Length: 207
Ligand SMILES: Nc1ncnc2c1ncn2[C@@H]1O[C@H](COP(=O)(O)OP(=O)(O)O)[C@@H](O)[C@H]1O
Ligand SMILES: Nc1ncnc2c1ncn2[C@H]1C[C@H](O)[C@@H](COP(=O)(O)O)O1
Image (cartoon, rainbow, N blue to C red; front, side):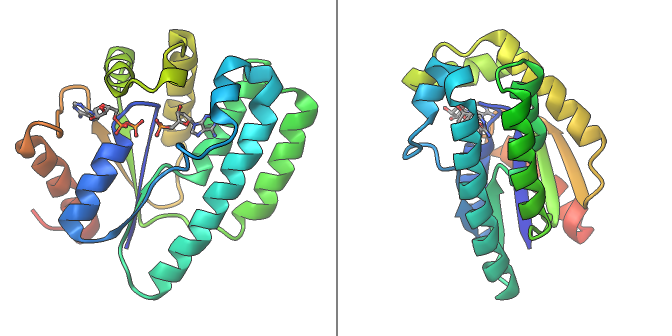
């Protein structure tokens, strides 16, 4: 079983991924953030580092999918924090649309993505955490990563629009949308139970 958690920056993916992995006793795959050699530079100068960052994330995410595939074939459960789909359909598409990535770099990137995606299996369940801008801003501030302090509201808004568009067209497997605006699964165990019940119901027909 493979559950992938998707959603905007600060939506609560990593927190939920760890809690679900603990609950189901499955392996968790997190994003390569702390050792990412481009992320800080990217936030300082997006046009300069957009392509480099996207190629880095794409490769890191692709390796992760191949590792997940091996665990899947050994019948191990996996929770994944963000997917390769979001790199291309959300982040790279948004950078291109916002003219922060050139046409030439975007086409080059897409060629690479297309070559890789045929080797990627979709998750058994895509769990989208839908969060409005105030929730995202509050949680990004709470996390307090220095390089994210200057993220513009406009950037988050554009990403949210890409998420909504992508999710409304997602046809590769089971999809569960959870509105997290009024959920606090950090402090309220009942809020975590609400999500776990929805997952059990979607995946196993329980409840
Ligand atoms: N539903 C929630 N309610 C309250 N706080 C949350 C919730 N989800 C996440 N947080 C807090 O918000 C911050 C960002 O969450 P995180 O899981 O790192 O988001 P993401 O991985 O989606 O970027 C963390 O400090 C986390 O403890
Ligand atoms: N593909 C990406 N392009 C740009 N930025 C990205 C990409 N994937 C992740 N990020 C950024 C967004 C955040 O600042 C960190 C971690 O993501 P998070 O949603 O907080 O887990 O990396």
